[in-house]
Image (cartoon, rainbow, N blue to C red; front, side, top):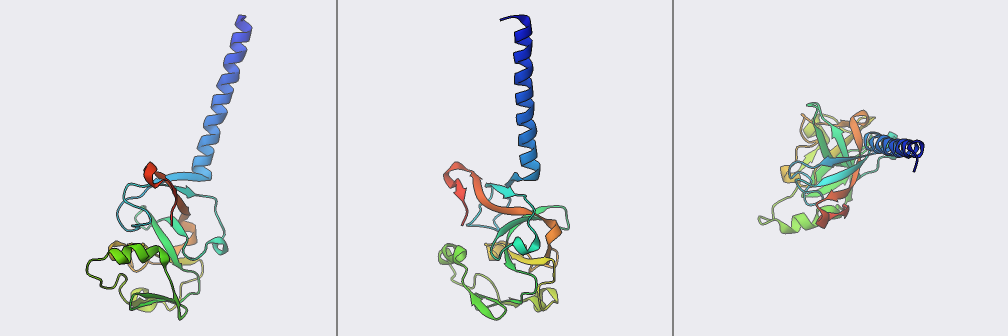
Length: 188
């Protein structure tokens, strides 16, 4: 191999590696990003220390669906991971451990395993209405009402410190566990 061929091959590899790095960084910052779950507020769906993939492709507000798991920024510049319960215009209430949205009871199958494991068999989610918690009758336009799956240990929209989540604070949806490998795959 001549010196010219060696130099040409070096630059080809350099360009290929550079493009791969740029592509990877672009995907990470603009499309998909790993996030580490801290705390127990989303158990059993996500456990403390799980690394999850966040889809950062910015959907319009109409693209988020009830029960999607999202990652969002809070007022303290922290990221939280919670489940969307209330969409704009919804009335949300809990009575006797049953979720009511606009007066209709909703099943939450992702909570079944956790509720069955409770030793005290008390209510998993205490009774509340939006008006009692946040002084609003409905979820405001451009906002969502979110709850952690571990309702007894979650700081979520029930707290005035979090309150309703504005769409512009949402970083993306989370639904895939990347780590640990024994939990690899789609979340419930």
